Length: 303
Image (cartoon, rainbow, N blue to C red):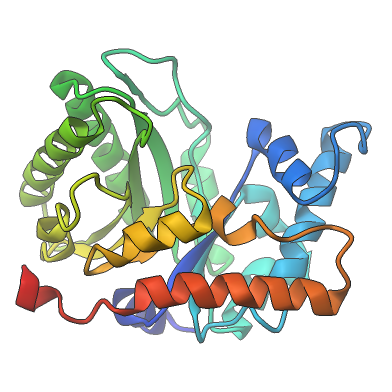
């Protein structure tokens, strides 16, 4: 796919973005969910080999293609690996799936009710390499735990600063200021985040666009101004701890937002499944998430 074809697919494609980017401390939990208990590997290399095998199995499944999965977010090691005998970005291109790369290095300790991203040394080199490998865009995550305007403003400022660096390499940034859905101040945090994002989008220089990956809001349709903003290519939602059925119900309440689920997509997959069982389970999850993402063509009418 050319950059223009990838942009068009992400902007208007009928489908959702799979998040296959568990890394570091989240990898043992992902493997446990897949049926591989901690202790089944002797070190980080074996652990990452196991998670890569899981991701390669997903990417090469007949159920995983560009008909309903329009994009996939990768961990750096996944980007550098192979699936079906091809470099992973090429394997995704061949299936009509647009590849993205997770670039953040984890979270700082909480301050002012939020967790900023840790420093990202070597980001320029990583972005240059990703662009050459056919990666379309990036994803970078920070977390909002409380409705603290100072903290949320700092998160938004950091996200947009990184976005400008990503854009300078011709890549599309997905900004992910995640609101903790378990926060007692979730609704208030959503509202402050919306306000700060709108201000930052309005102040963006040039004509570039960004994407947003947000927690599903406590108030349905709250993020429609972001969906319709001329500087936003697409808004996607994380499952944020919701089980798949609940995440799909919440997603369907929000026009213009498509899924970018991880646990909610992969939760039923198991290491010991036959290929037929694995493909059927993955296909069922894809169908369910696609259906919740699909009724998104009436945004202007309800904005």
